[in-house]
Amino acid sequence: MRALMGVLLVLAAVPAAADAAALKVETVSTRPDMVTGGDVLVRVTGAVRPRVAVDGRDVSGAFRPADDGGVLGLVDGLAPGAHQLVATSGRDRASLDLRAHPITGPVFSGPH
Image (cartoon, rainbow, N blue to C red; front, top):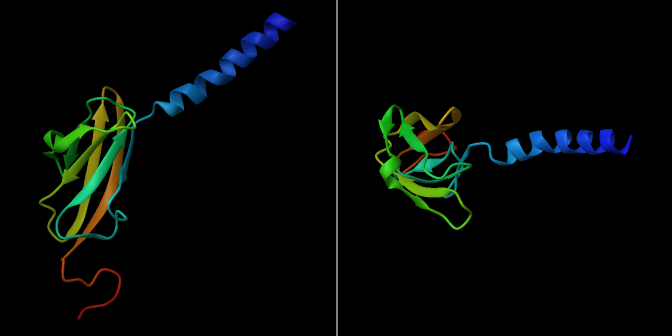
């Protein structure tokens, strides 16, 4: 009975460990729907050297190792409008929808 309990405990811990290493992407400098000035600071965790692309444009070269074990990079060249940022590492994939606004605004209100 104790052996069975030990096996069940080990099996229960496996998904949690897998989730902890899952690829994740997040904005650091602002909310993903409030990007201004054409650039945004992005953190990718769960991979040492992920491939990162915005709308199919490879921006992986902008990323450097961060203290948390992930990578951090300034993604620039974002024209006003919708963009999709995709990070991949092996079979893992994470994406983030971005919305860029002019530096002069508006960001959350109507036109000037």
